[in-house]
Length: 225
Length: 47
Image (tube, rainbow over all chains, first blue to last red; front, top):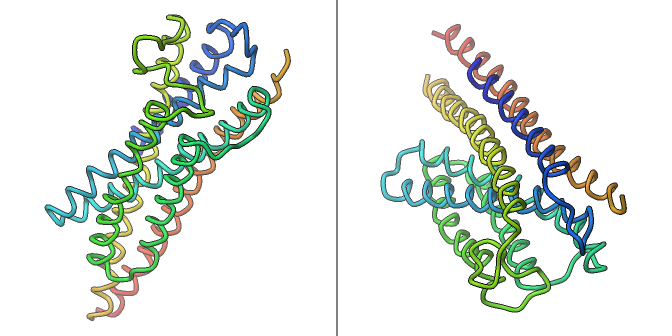
């Protein structure tokens, strides 16, 4: 518990440092002005969300193969945390889009596939609330989670495969893409606290799920007694 | 300084989402811990 509190304090400090770097170290974009600084929040949120869904996918596959409830606990924790980061991405994107594109939202490939991703993982969590029996719930949600993950490569590839309103990739985007080296460094630095926050949230959520597992066990014991 | 409010709003909303989630996990854990204790106690009493 004490270790987790120290880790939480470190995450808060890192986030404050990232915000400082985003506002005071990164240069102002000559075309977009201040509003482009949302990139230091929006992109790390999006990437961290995808990493969380990847963790969820790995846990789901592991559960199907090994049927160990701990993989199920990790799966649901990662799905929930992924949803939190994707929600932040879906909120910050339109705030950035309005002054730059003149609109909050458009149904282009990147935005639509991200919205579908969000809905798929909401469905994953809703599915879990509908099934009482723990083993059946874990198996069905793991299978659904594996299916839901199909959208993750689509989100990643959407701005590479199709011409979209969303900007083309600036990281891993090919020879003509790229960022100013200082902006790239700050962006990478801003991703670190997001990953640390992801670990912190996933750890807390996993502990909750483990406790829920204990609760189920004691409840079954009490019913049998 | 154009759009500074929008940048601040984005940061506040995102941090708010993270904080609210962290607190919600804490509240759910505290509630479950109480329920678990209660269940364990009632099980002990019945034995």
